[in-house]
Image (cartoon, rainbow, N blue to C red; front, side, top):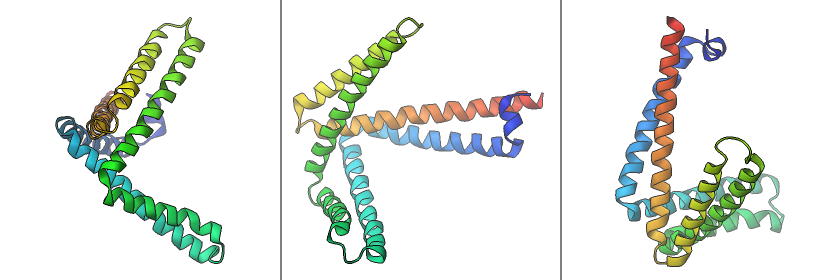
Length: 187
């Protein structure tokens, strides 16, 4: 009896594996489309972020209205979220450029973190893959910064698409593994 079958019942594992595979396949499809059309994917990303800011502004505004209606400082966050959301829709190219800068900064922090972890992990087998990850993150950050803001529309879409694609691969693999465990548990 495996750990999974001890913790979850058969129906839960079945549902999990099927839903995970379906979600993974959908992410694979969207990621693959985005890899071949990174410009469209960048516009999708900035539109999605615009909607997130608008919904956030509405929720924050409602809470502020109900709890801190008379506080000027409490209104700053919902108003700022509203403005940013609107700006993403009115100026999508500038929004993509801003996202590219944030992505570049994230990749630099990720590289620093990977280098640090590699040094801590060094005597163990496979430590070098963390160095490779750090170098790739630095290269991507530099590529984004070199062509910024013009190349932003390409890099943001490509990064989002590749991320979705590999997340899809991970989900399909996870779902297939759960199905395999279920079969083994039945045997």
